[in-house]
Amino acid sequence: MKQFQYMRPSTQQAVLEAINKPGTKIIAGGTNLVDLMKRGVTAPDKLVDINHLPLKSIAATKTGLHIGALALNSTVSENSLVMQKQPLLSMALKAGASPQLRNMATVGGNMMQRTRCTYFYDITMPCNKREPGSGCGALEGYNRMHSIFGASPQCIAVHPSDMCVSLAALDAVVIVSGHKGERRIPFTEFHRLPGDHPEMDNHLAKDELITGVEIPDNNFAKNSYYLKVRDRQSYAFALVSVAAALDIDNGTIKQARLAMGGVAHKPWRLIDAEKALIGKSVSEESFKQAAEIAMQGAKAYEYNSFKLKLAPATITEALKHASGLV
Ligand code: SF4
Image (cartoon, rainbow, N blue to C red; front, side):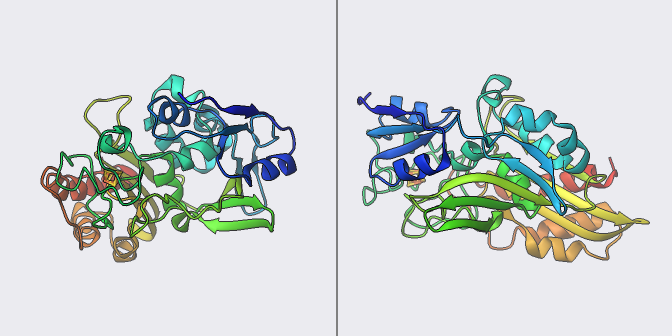
C-alpha cells in the first residue's frame, strides 16, 4: 500500500480546507476505503479522518427525521425514532453487510461506497470506473451481479447499498456542506448513472462534505418492507432488493413508494409503478401489474438475465409483505 498522510481535524472548516487539495480522501468507518487502498484500487496521498466532527445525532425535526452523516449503521438501525417513524430504513440497514461492519460503517460512508464489481477491484483487469478509458471487463465478462437498468457501454456496474435504496424510496434529502455553503440534494439525484463518466458515482463536488440526511414525515410506517434476495442469508450483496412503502386506507392504496437495489448504478426508483398503484386495491394482481410496469426498459447481459424474472417477483413479494397480504 502506498504511504499516506493522516489527519483528524475537529472542525468542519478544517475538513473542508483539507479536502480541497488533490489526492485527499475522507475516511470515517473505512469499511470500504481501506479495502480499496489495500488492493491498490485507490491510492490517496492524505486521509482526512472526520470522526471528531459532531455529526452523529439522530433527531426528530418539525418536518421529519434528521440523521447525522457519522451515525453508525448499527445505531441507526436500532434507534427507536427510526424504528417507529421510518422502519423501512431500519430493515434495509439490517439487511446490509454484517453486524461487525454495521458497527463501523457510517451513514455518509454507506452513501459513498463504491461498486462491488469484481473487475473494479481486480487491478489487472480493464475498468472504466477505476481507470477511465481502459474498457469494461464486465461487459463481455461474468456479469451476473450487474445492472439491468440505466447502464452505458462504458459501465454496467450496480450500486451496492441497501440503506440507499430505502432512502431513495422515502424521498430523503442529502445535506452537504462546502465552500459555497450548504446544499440540499434530493436523494434520488445524489447518485448518478454511468454515462460516459463511470468514474463518477455521484454529484458530490470534490470540496463538499456530507453532513446528514433528512427523511420527511410520511404515513408509510405501518406498511413498509425491505426484501433483499442474495446468494446467502447474510453478508452478501443484493442480486435484487426492493424497498416498498404503502399508505393504505380501507384496502385502497393512497400513496406508494418503491425503489430497487442491485439493478442499476444508483438506487432505482420506480415512479411509474408507484403511480400505477395509487387508487388500486391491495391485491396480488395490482402488485403484479405494478411490477410489470417497473420492468419496462430492462436490459440484461449474458449472465444476469435471471434478474428479468427475479426483479418483478421481488417487487410483487415486497408489496405483499408491505401491505400485509402475507
Ligand atoms: Fe468497471 Fe463498471 Fe465495467 Fe465493472 S461494470 S468493470 S465497474 S466499468
